[in-house]
Length: 554
Image (cartoon, rainbow, N blue to C red; front, top):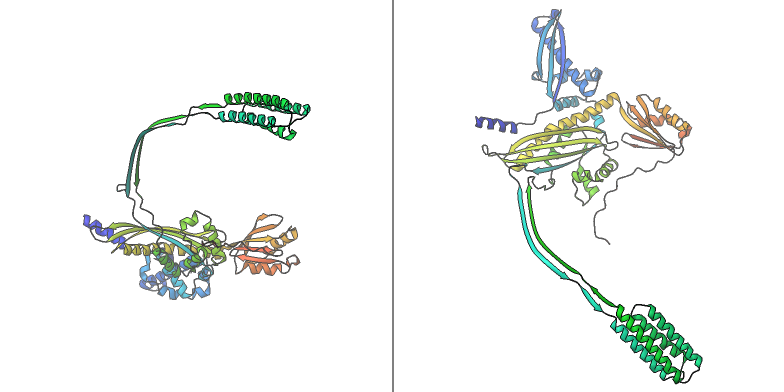
């Protein structure tokens, strides 16, 4: 039993991805009197098949598109290409004088659209190809997360015990030298005055007064340097005044010496210092750390995305214009490697989308990621098993409108991990590609059916009613304009949202504004569904500057 289940699981893993189903129903009838029962049944079945085909064409191309004589002429040829096995759920019954039959047409969506394209009646194909898509996709190859089998376990333990003692106490009496210096200075004054010649008594008085003033200042100051300053003052006075009499010189010397000695004693007593600064500590530290890693290490995206290449092939089958990202990515980012995750977490994504619009001329931006998980070798079959998940979104580079998003998952097997990854990548693209392609095609079908939305902006200095009302009336008069709604209005800008069914709204607007003198000097700019009309000169659109390549400074 286990072996049988294992075989079934492996078969499912190897099976191709389920195609996107295209399903429509049709009902036909034939008069019972039209012939024998076999003929009546055949006529009724043929009518039901044709009605199912008509419903399918209208579903792809838009309402009543099959009524076009060009399309109606192609119906028999297309029916011949669809096998009877594609018409399922046949039911027949007699209703009055008629025999009715109902059938369901069930086939691959891409296959049906290809039939219409080959017949030349795929109405939206040319429209879709007029708008290019720039595709970007990162692919990651990893292993599954197993909470019972950690990838890494780390335990750390440390124990530290000890103590420290620091003594930074201070005890000093640094002012003793200052007192000695003051006494020495006083002695030098004595010597100078003793060696002086005779001088008048008025000079002695000045010397005495200068000495007294100096000593008085020393008595008020508590620092040891004042005693030196007082002695220096007497020395300067003696030099300036010249020699004096021996009698008064001796007297002056005694006073100066006495004052200097007193000041020195005062300074010495105030300069003593003592401070206690002791630091002591004891510690007993225990540190424990346990780290368990379950997720595999992220090696970053693969250099080559297998899913991306397979997906581009699917887009080509839908006749979509897909621009390869490698050329533009290398031009924009230059030597700076970058992933989608890094772009999404910074301003680079917005800048790159702007770059895609202005330089790559891409109308839409497709952003995707695929993750392939290696589940290891199957013990019974010996083959490697892997699973994959792909997520993609497609949005307008001008307005940011999302037109096609999809997430799909698949599983596959292979002879080795790389072979398994390639197989699951193909299945991811085969499953998700048709869904994305069909959504993009349906987007253009709805735009052709119900109209495309445009944003028309009038810019100018001090816009008056003549300009704004003139533009509004001109747009409403255009054939194919389904709706025109005012979005915003300021003194310098007037903006309308216009729903239009037709070839070129810009050309239609120009034809009508040419007849208005107020718009004679106008200029205009078009970016996808954004139409800007300027009363004079339009400012250049902000272009995304490529990041500067890192290099050596000159």
